[in-house]
Image 1: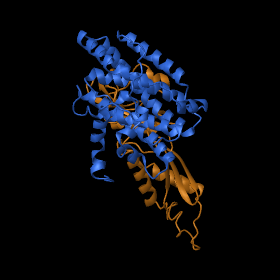
Image 2: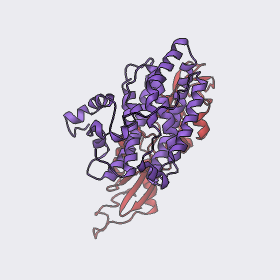
Image 3: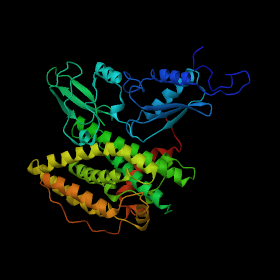
Amino acid sequence: MRAGDLIGTDRSSASGQRREGTAADIDYAWQVLADVPDPEVPAVSVVELGIVREVSWQDGHLHVLVTPTYSGCPATEFIEQLIREALEDAGFAEPQLQQKLDPAWTTDWITDAGREKLRAFGIAPPVGSSSKRSLLGEAPQVQCPHCGSEHTEQISEFGSTACKALYRCRDCLEPFDYFKCI
Amino acid sequence: MTKYDELTEFLLLLGDSAMVQGQRLCEWCGRAPAVEEEMALMNVGLDLVGQARNWLEYAAERINDGRDADMLAFRRDERAYRNLLLVEQPNGDFAVTMVKQFLYDAWQYHLLEALTESADEQVAAIAKKSLKEVTYHLRRSSEWMERLGDGTEESHARMEAAIDTVWRFTFELHRCDAGMQALAAAGVIPQADELAQRWQTTVADVLEKSTLTMPEAARSFYLNGRDGMHSEHLGILLAEMQFLQRAYPDASW
C-alpha cells in the first residue's frame, strides 16, 4: 500500500475516523505533485515551476497552496484540476486547494532541475534573478537553447504564452521561446 | 445605480477598467499589423482580464449577493460599470491604441505600486501580483511611444493626433471623491494628488523622449465613469462582450 492510500477517508481505520496525515504523507504528496506536468510546458512539473507553495494537513484533508504564474494565465484552473486528480488518484481524499497571490510568483522559484528541463525542451530559462531592474532594464543576454550561442535577439516581448518572449538565434537561425524573468 | 461601500466601489473601478481595456485589446485579434504585435496585444489583454477577475472576485465577495466575478462582468449593464472613460474609447488606429495603453499603463503602474502597501491585505496581494505584469506593459508601451513619436513624419503626426483624441479623458484618472478620500485617510489607497504627480512626471518624461507635445491638464466635463455616466462607446463594447451570457445565461465550457 502506498503512503497516501486511504488517508483522510473513512476507510483509513476500523473505527471509521479520519486520521491526520504524517510527515511521510506530506512527503508522498510532494512526490505525487512532482509528477504533475504544467499543461503548457509539459517538460516541467508544477513543483519545478514553483507554483506549489505549501502542502500541509488541515482538518483531516491535505491542503495545497497554489499560486498562479500570471493573473490571466488560462492554465491556472486546469492546473488545479490536474493537481486535484493526481492527489485523489494517489489516495488523498478531497484534497483542498487554495490560491495564494502574495508573495507573487517569481521565476526565481523555478528549480535548477526545472531550468535544465526547460532548456532541453527548447525554451531558454529565465536569465538572472527577478528585480525591478530586470523588468525595466535592457533585454538580458539570452542563450540559444539549441546551439548555446549568446548571439541572439528578441523578436517580440511576448511569445506563445504569457510567461514567454520570442527570440531568434543569429547563429543557428532557429527561433525559440524565452521564459521571461519576473 | 446602486452604490456600494467605498472599497467595493474602488475595486469595481480597478476591475472594470482592466476588463474593458482587456476587451478593447482583444478587438485587435486577427487585425494587428504583425503577428508578433498581435501576440503582444493579446497577452497584455489576457493579463488585464486576469487582473480584472481578481479585483471582481474580491468585489463580489464584499457585495455578497450571490453573484460571482463572471456575473459582475457579463450581467451588469453599462450604467453599472465603473471603468475609466479612457479605456472604453475605440481603438482607432495603432497610434490611438498605444497612446491609450500608455496613459492607462502609467496610471496603473503608479497606483498599483502604492497599493502594494495598502492597509487592506487582499488589495495589497492583488496589487503585488498585477504590478509585475503592468511594469512590463508600461515598458512596452513607453517604447512604442518613443518609436512612433520619434519615428517618421507620418507616425509622429498620427501620435500627435492620437493624443489630441484621448487626452481629454485623462481628467478622470486622478479624480478623488469623498469615498476615495476616506480610503486614503485609512491607508487603503494612496493620496490622489501624490499619484497625479507621479503619473504626470512619467507621462511628461516619455512624451519628451518621444518628441511629442504634452497637453495642458485635461478639464473635467459631464461624463463620469465611476457614476456609470459613460460615453456612447461602452454600450457597444459590452453588447459584444456579454452577448453569449445574455443569450445563453449560465452557459459554460
